[in-house]
Image 1 (cartoon, rainbow, N blue to C red):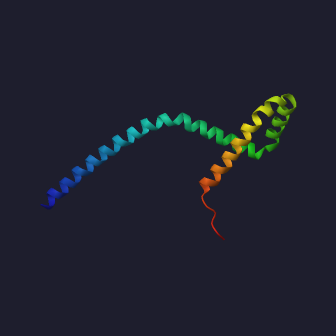
Image 2 (cartoon, helix red, strand yellow; image 1 turned 180 degrees about the horizontal axis):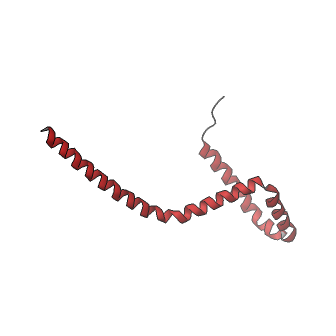
Image 3 (tube, rainbow, N blue to C red; image 1 turned 60 degrees about the vertical axis):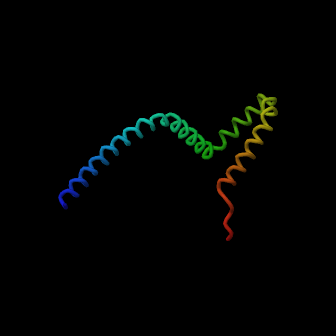
Length: 101
């Protein structure tokens, strides 16, 4: 009886190992579809970090745009402000309620 249980456990272990290998293979194949979007997200995040470390360049670019094309700024300003307000609301909502001190 004890030997039979041992054989059943070994058989079950082998089945689980085979299933695990198949699941890992499937996951690797499916994760390949996410590689390109995640790489783009990484690049955007790195660009955002660079802009935070070098704010002078973004302000210089904005100043040049205002100087060269003021109509473009006036046309896009309401959209940009609305987007900024939406970002602030989403950030506050995602952070949750403030903890009392």
